[in-house]
Image (spheres, rainbow, N blue to C red):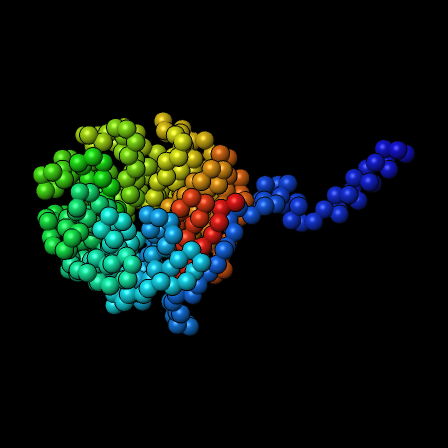
Length: 375
């Protein structure tokens, strides 16, 4: 009799548990939020019944972490303080899909447009100081070294621009492959006196900055005769003598930074960004989910997900945060992939995050900029 009573008691107690608590126990949701919105502000009012709204510009914090700068699809470059108050707005006239760059020593913001114009803007007032016309659209993020800004375009052009007046220092043209996506290139990455970038034909290029962009090596990750999508659009990550990159079909590739020789690769379709954190490699394949590997290429964990195209993973302590263009923002535990939270007020997010200490700034496809706190 006592066993029957215990059994009935267990059934009653279990039935009193909420559906949410069942999800918590099953690892489907977390009882705590790890990203908390502090404020949001509408920047773009999209037309009703238009195609899917997308905002591609990645916000940035200035070097002090006290201001946020972001571009919009309407061509506005806007600066906010951490309370969400607008400090200045500058109209660059055509859509801004790239990430601005703040150069504190020059009090300058560098921003490019899809119309091929690169601007130098005063960081305090938003006043345009200079303009450079390039060939192709500026979509990625610029990098800086020794008075020169380096940036690429959709035509596989690499430009070296003087930051004081916007004059051309030198340029390097890489032939564009016909029939392939215009977003198929990566942003440049600088290591020492060398610059690395991925091209739309699946090649990784290394150049010498001291020799005006002279090619050091070029490595083909894909065969354009065999594949339809061959882009190498993941920004390179460099650690020691290894360069971590990816192409659309080949997946994650680890190269010798000095020679371009392939060390190993991990096959996963559609990788567009790579994050290294504490000797772990994180990336998302739209078809195979979120991955965590060690630096030898061994899979530690994988989490299936179907939320559209991912952006760059941000890891902060025990928090891993990922944007998706259909699913908004999700937060997980980077050690085991345990799901914490999903945040999506509508339309997802097609750009990447800006992060400063425990703050994250994000421009969502609904046209609003958000400031979050990581708890």
